[in-house]
Length: 255
Image (cartoon, rainbow, N blue to C red; front, side, top):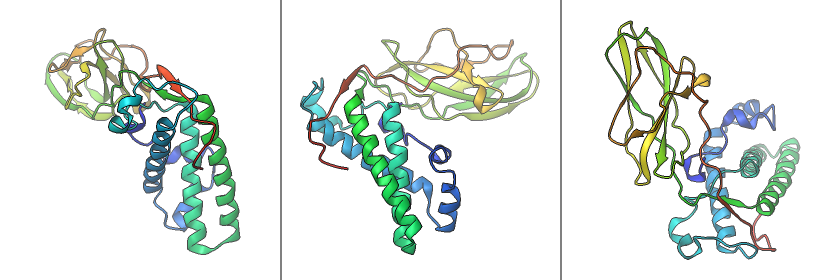
């Protein structure tokens, strides 16, 4: 996924690092969704700072970097970890400021150091860039037409595809319930300029979506699920991988 597609982590992801974070957030009335978004904003600003100040590698879009910002930045595993740890740093900073509790202060200092280390590791690994970024799709519109498919509840997501075959991150899944003799129709909305088509992923649960089309559906057309029902295609991916990597300068100015 691209950094501009949304938060690299969701609330459940934070529990991998801190199993008690949901209880802490509830006790201290801290909105984790707000903190995840704040962390994304702060990481994005820091990443832009790194790209503007790079010295060890070439940014292919350095001449327009201030204009495009981080719209081509790919969320690597290193950056995803950085974002999660920085979010926890923000949460415990707020919890400590609310209560002046030594336990929260210790957690804040722990995650501040871990976040800094994760940032430095991300910079050493490199900021991943997509040379032809394809943004995440919006949730598609679902409807039905008369057909011969079996009824049921179907979850559907789409992903935009460029002329070069690059696929963006899938949209959030949306569901529709059908009866027998109804076929699902998928309509993609608000295509970005880079998109020439889209892929459709569907399944009977949100965690089982697979590719339904053999070739991308052209922009402006719809996809109708066939009478045979769901296809056993490949599982949906997470979006583009980086084409190039840019490392920061020897002096890390923030953290």
